[in-house]
Image (tube, rainbow, N blue to C red):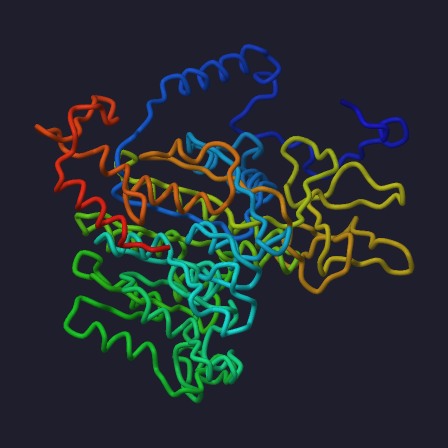
Length: 541
C-alpha cells in the first residue's frame, strides 16, 4: 500500500540504506518458493507441537521493564545488525517461545501504569494503584495507614513456602519497583530506605523496602544494585569512597548488609560488591548470595566496565546454578530494568542495547535448564511511546534516519518518542539532523511533546512462554492473570488442582492418563483430600 506522500516526495537515498545482509541474497527472496518453503517449515513445526502438561518444577521469569512491542521489534533488528546482518529477519531467543499472548497493563486508578502497580499484578495476582507495591487497591499512594491489612503476597513467596529456592536478579537497585514486587509491601515504591520515608509513615509503623528485603521472605539469591540504601549515613561506598552521594543513606544506623551476613552465619552464604568477588563464588558450594554492584542502579550494558560489573548473562547464570541445586526446584525473577530508564531519557540506543543483552540472558537461562520441567516466561510490565516509522529501506540502521523527509524538508529518525526530552523545536522549526550521527550512544531521539522524562505508554505487552503448561499464557489476558497461571503450573500458592491431577496412580487414587491429564480412576483417599485442602490454605492472598 503506497501512501499519499508518494505523489509529492521522493525517497531520498541514505548512507547504507541499500545494505543487504552478507549471508542473505535479494535474488533468493525474489523467488516465491523461498517464502513458501519457509512458511511450510514453520507450519510443520507448529503442527508437531505437543502440549507439556507436567507440573513445572522451576519457573524462570524474565521481565523486560518498558520492553513494549516496538522496543522488542527494534531490538531484534539491532541484534541482527550488530551481527552484520540486515536485522529484520533475525530470530531473537524470545522469538523461539512457542506460546504467545498479550497482557493488559492498566492499573486500578490509571489507564497507563507504572512498574510498581504492574509488578504487583503479574507477581501477586492483584491489580492495584499507581506507585504502590505489594498491596491491593485499597491502599493509597504514600499513605502508610492504608497499607496495613491490604498486603498481598507474590509468586516468589508462594514458591518459597512450597520448599523451592528463590532469587531475584536485576540491573536496577534491588529495592526498585519490579524486584520489590516479589517481597515488599509498601504504600510508596520510593521508600527505598528509611531516609526516603516521611516521619509520619515511620511513626505509623511502616518500614522501608530495604529492611523488608531481609525480613519478609528468605530469598536465596539477591543480585543487583542498591548498596547505599542498606548502610548508615556516613558509610563510604567501597567503590566510590570519595563520592558522598554514593555513601550510605540510612538514618536508623542499621547496616543491612552486615545484618544479612549475621543472619546467614554458619550457612554457605556470600556477599560480593565487585566482579572479582562475584567470580570467586562457587555456586556448587553456595546456598545464599547477595551481590550489590553499585550504590544505586547498575550501569547500562553499553557503559558497563566488564572488569568491575558482571553482565546480566553472567548474573543470571550464577543465580540459576545456585538455585537449581534444590531438588524441589526454584523460582527466579530476572529483570532488565534499565530498558525502561533509557527510554525515560529518550535514548533508544541504550534501551535497545539493554534489550539485546536481556535476550542473551534468556538464551543462557534456556541453556542451563530443561524445557521438560522449567516454565520460562518473558514479558514486559508496560511499554513506552516509542514509534517505528518512515519507510526505511531494508537493512537500514534501526537507529538511523528515514529516507522519507518531512514537509519541512528536514529528515527525522526511524525511531522517535511521543514525548520526552528530545523535543527540540526552535523558532518553530525542527533541528536539521542531516549531519548528526543518530547512531551514537549520546543521541536523544526527537519527541513530539516536551517532558523532562518520557512517560510510559498503555498498549498491551507481549507474554512469551515455553515449558510445562506454557499454553496457559496464550490469548489476551489481564496482567494479574500471569501470577495465577504460574502458581497453577508449578503447584504453588492457593490453587493446587494441578498437583492433584498428577497424583501417582494407585488403588483409590486418581489415575493419570498417558498424556498427563487426570482420568477417573476412583475417588481420592480421604488423606490425600485432607492434605490438598491443608496446602490450599498456605497462601491466603
